Image (spheres, helix red, strand yellow):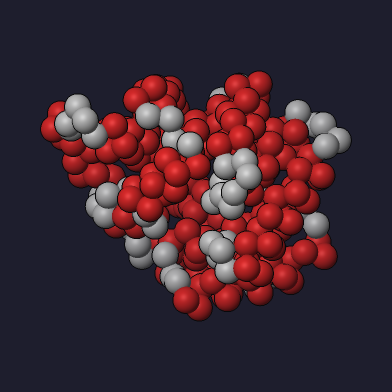
Length: 276
């Protein structure tokens, strides 16, 4: 199983621009969806990993657009075809959004078990997912789970195993401790200095906003949106920044874009993600 996870990672898991098919990363979601749907009709019976990957990426696109049940079906189908960590993670994240906390916890724990005894890309994400569920359920173990995820991320950064500066910055911001904001900003800036994809820039916007550096946050948000990506979280963060700058009309425009992109990102999840 450990070799299977490594092989899947090496050949199938790409960076965010590649993961959603190139077109999706440039905001051409409809074209990306069409390409993935076409790929489903052309898949080969002996390519289980490819079949699972296509469904996972298509599901990710649908999830970003609030089509949660459709996305869930695709993630479940991907796992039926070939059990793999990425589909498991995305399914657990989706179950968290749907309030299916028991199922989400099961899948996060299953994800940890997949990498047991070896370095894994997914341990920190699974622990963070468990922390989110605990926080949404108002359980006292949430902080400990966030702390465990942080430990994993710091270890991987120190050993240069996988990097993860962006993920550490995001976790520190999500956990919500004021004393963590300066380091979150430092980590986000370090990552943005070497990689300026929209996901990295979104975390930088969040860190700058939490630091009260609204003008810089605005510039980072504008740069992120030049990718043309349709992402509700990015729109919500841009709206927060514009509101802080007193640009109410622009803030409202971003809010409308966020709600139009993913109308099912509810207040509970927005609060968890620092979007309220």
